[in-house]
Image (cartoon, rainbow, N blue to C red; front, side, top):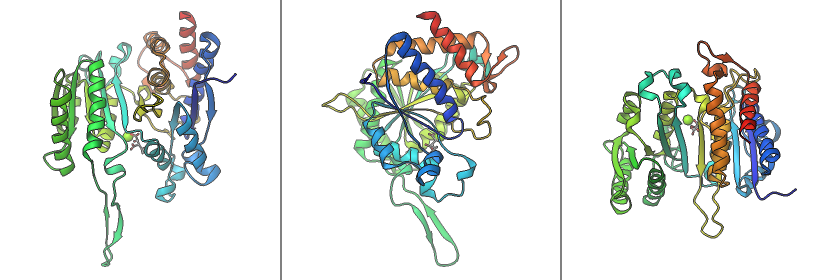
Length: 370
Ligand code: IPM
Ligand code: MG
């Protein structure tokens, strides 16, 4: 049967295929138990695409991604690809998807499930109940701006350089997403840059200041330097609601925020494009914050929760299926509360399980609600 929900699945490398395959069991479950069918296609990305086609992302796969209602991404990379030329590295496949699909808004929630508050490296009361959102600009800044390169200086030395560049519209559009998200949350936006050192940071702060006074009078807004933000995240993370920042600072601060929760294996993300005024649709890619973890790949011990929570974000943001997303999130919460743990989140007195047994337990919980 043809469905109107096109999901392109790109498992990628390392633990990517292991966790994506587990999530496809939930896709099947939705078809069986909730009569919601997705039109699932699978493609190659990263090292897997390089091995098959000599490029980390083919034009065909890119076209499929643009055409899909949502892309569910696993992870890319592995030591066997370390010596490839820069443009052929697995990560370039992901970066090209982000850029060509114009996925400028990257939502990285860092929340702590009640049952997991003890797993953080921070003291329990600092993180229990934590629910913050890092909004990272994803298609601009130092990741993409020109000029960049490595040049010979002619004296036996070289220079390597990158450009950090943001325009007013780029800053405004990510700022508007932050405002929108904060309105649906606790009403606070922290805009983060280094306006004390960088010209792109000066423009970022000016633009956000103007935008906030024109469009976010109802919200609590503030500005913070990126280094201080890193420090505040580990000092007292609950002061934040939505943190909006550029591509590079967002990369770093979201890893830092991820660690507050106790496991990188638990955190999802959504990368969204602009809403098309005619169709009402937006390009979207959902991926866990964790990478391909080559050190544990193939051992069936990876935590599938970040990938499943990414799919749950897809249900929320691309398919208007918040009820089903709540159901999945609830099932995860109850499984964690029952003490079931993959090794990355294992603690005293808990039950250690493999990737697929974790998903068995989540599916059992789902069966209990329908
Ligand atoms: C991330 C990753 C990527 C990034 C890599 C894999 C290119 O670290 O999504 O945070 O730097 O953006
Ligand atoms: Mg990163």
